[in-house]
Length: 110
Length: 111
Image 1 (cartoon, each protein chain N blue to C red):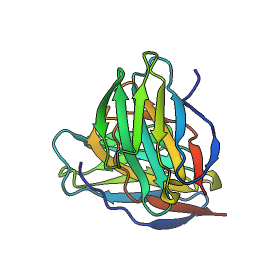
Image 2 (cartoon, rainbow over the protein chains, first blue to last red):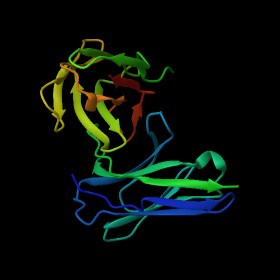
Image 3 (cartoon, each protein chain N blue to C red):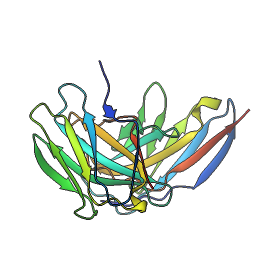
């Protein structure tokens, strides 16, 4: 399983766009990039998954450059409720043996 | 539809005892995985079951075991509990698509 590297923590003000970048230099051809969000004492929650270029859903966008060695999760106009830990995962889609790294602790400030 | 249900939510056990945790996946999901989360080690994969068979296993000692029943419900057992087994144990079910659905977890405290 490809390892990922993310910033340990980030702070942002309410209403700003937040971009969290993840490095995955050893990503394999079959690997997808998936992001999860976790609040304290709760299980992680799926945010978005992508393979290349750009994916957008109702809560986030995922940008993946052509070499796929990194990816950026973009959260538009964050609110206080977006304060959480965000995990970037790399692996085959549909796999349920997920490898979670350290994650990025996002704190949204009023 | 109902989400992933884990029972109990909280548990306190004594060193040396054993414990069994239960997970009911989302209806129709045949893959169930277990994870351990601690402040020091983060979220770590324990094992995955699919159609009553263990399909993947993480790097945990044999004291950690699991099983899956024909209705896809799964149990995880930890024998000879150690203080370091205190953790949030999470179960996730999947339909084989992109998303894994996690339960609220069982908070195990070993004293």
